[in-house]
Length: 251
Ligand code: NDP
Image 1 (tube, rainbow, N blue to C red):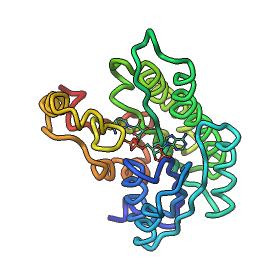
Image 2 (tube, rainbow, N blue to C red):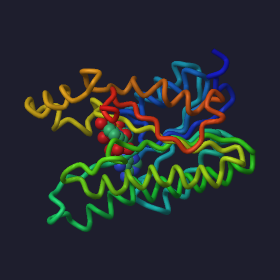
Image 3 (cartoon, rainbow, N blue to C red):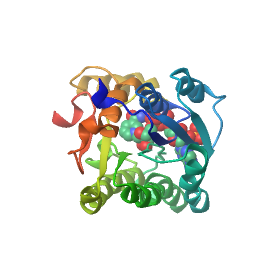
């Protein structure tokens, strides 16, 4: 449907080399967007091949999101290679598990730098450009732990709680300028991030029993939500966090 088409637009997707990022980059390309994949290492071109299979351009912008200097180069480099920035999907993220009493400061800093600080810096860099053009879509990837505390993941929960509040704060400032800032909160998704949980038969069963939909989410389950929030279908949707969680939060 035309309502959801993104022809002539450019989307920046962080962590697009695997997991949820790959599925979302492919979905945005399928509805017409060119894609800048922000990633710190190669993926033998799998996501790039997928994007190009839809006839879209795909540029890989190398960046370690834990390094501010590299983060600040992402938008100028994307503009130089693809001409414009219409959509930003802040997807990349890491998780470190330790009991709170033993949580290493180094891990705290890494999680906060990648999951929250880089999100703010990229929003800021994209926001300036989008406000100038009077239009833009920012989609931050939050988490169930934007709403719940979890156990042994204090840095991740703090960062994802921050992502949710940052989304609302930026939305308040930028909505009148034509920039939509929203977030998606995925539930339990079957990616490498959850490999340990999926391989633990007991935990796996407990999780599936707790999900109203009765199954883990898959990367493709993110596609509809990201296309909606990137397209003009969501022009009057500002500052929301959309759960894609099989009903987890409503239970
Ligand atoms: P994965 O672990 O499968 O992928 C994480 C992605 O982030 C990879 O592309 C990874 O790149 C990238 N990344 C990590 N650190 C950096 C860095 N310093 N610089 C650049 N890229 C980096 O995770 P998912 O696909 O499952 O998760 C995607 C997002 O969704 C994350 O923000 C996560 O917190 C969130 N989320 C996931 C849930 C789930 O159940 N899977 C649930 C709720 C939220 P590399 O290949 O180089 O490591």
